[in-house]
Image 1 (cartoon, one colour):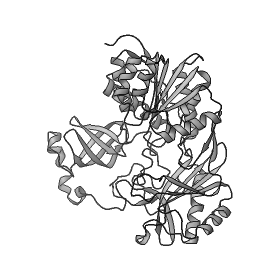
Image 2: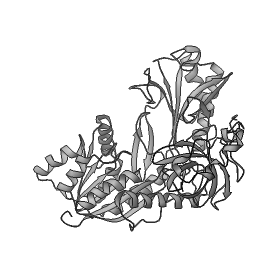
Image 3: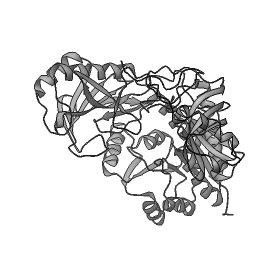
Image 4: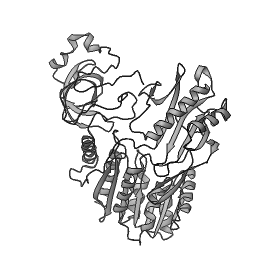
Length: 497
């Protein structure tokens, strides 16, 4: 299926070179013991070998230990392991090293089931048992609050994991290349433009994998050109497949640089025959040189313009570009945690800042008096309004803007929210928004975060401003990866310190 090998197998020595090349230190044996004769970490050189006891997992899934009081980051190393590693990068505050050998193995280490684990970059911790993944991610959250908020004791609830932590992704967005006559679909290898074939990806739903394989076979049979193939600017750039876990609908979108593909009618006809379960086929036009997958224009080629899907009792119509959570099963756990933190009785006014397409606000609406969502992207606000109308959530309204501007305006008009919910991007909350929360002083503040570091940093501002943390609920939205989602409940306790 793929020429790449696993970068680490069991407890064997690991050279870090998938094709078996020797490292610089292996070619120069005298460097192997050079580090032992140096009394300070600052005296290390690239290529030196060091022995490190790994203490914890980092936010990118790397093992973190210390060599003479300087932090060492080692991909593939696990907490509680003693490893030999080769120094690859020296920085004033840290060292990066490549794993060579595990001298003391963690009981959580397992053989990763994916043949391209460590190459495609989509997963970072398949080599850890699932129980070990949950523990390591919980400690990652605890470490963030200790480091960035100065809190050694914070109530972190047991992480909400998955019974089956595989096949959970409902959507694939895969780049294309041709290898001989074969079309390869996959992800870019880390730090390169080489596409790694991820056929049969174990975290994608089987229906998604099956659809991707069938689309590739059609592109091969019709010899549809690929973008930049033989220098051509036209052709297909990306395959996007989304599957509805509840509806069973299947949406196929081809992203191309032009508004029409060669042999387009034959392509649509053969896709329909090969994928009878598909409910819609579309072409998205993206002629720009950009890391963004989608362009601004989507052309329906056959079937429904949107696909149907549900989340709890909420119904959604999803266009090819519409946002929807990638792990619906874990999303229900996440949103129920938000509802528990909000403590709604039906009498509260809720502001859903950074509301996106409105899913959290719509989830909370049956339990609140009023919900107002705020989102800076106009298209997302329009989606949120359509979602509200479709689901009959008449006590919800969505507004284009930023919370730090709209909240003070609403306060002057007499609105005092009882609960503010915020679900910002990985960079965290805008400082002006934090100031607005401290001026508005809602009884409860609920923070949904995908980055424990920025979560803890922002909480420090709110703690100093008079809030207290009640609990943190981690949710494993993306098993086999180092990502961890958190719901945090804070209550107003009094005047600032």
